[in-house]
Length: 159
Image (cartoon, rainbow, N blue to C red; front, side, top):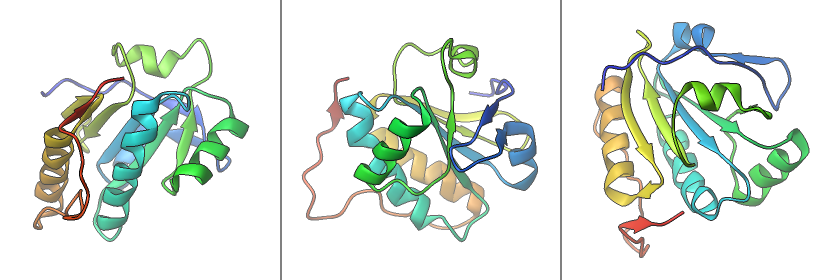
């Protein structure tokens, strides 16, 4: 990949502001752009939450970027069990547009040098497994499982 991540400075759902440059000083970032009415986002974000919990002790941070208002974004997080922090990208979606993607969810792994090391648009089982491998490589540990052996997860899910 190697493309440089554009700056993000957005209000945070939990209060304050999410600033990508400041966040990257602490740790690489997994950033997930999503819309609450997107069924593929509803399906995908709980798997990201699983990765968030699996890598909580590692120097990796997760951040959702919701294209919806605070109240609806909060309800989405409660309904789907999302605990990682959320930033709000209100219309005209300046942060989302700066990343030039055509659909959500779009998930990025941004290294501390602002390089986009991984990008996934939509749901892909193989893509989420690769994301876990990329995070593990940065954390210098074995990859965390994304899916449970008892789960029947499709290879892809159209948006």
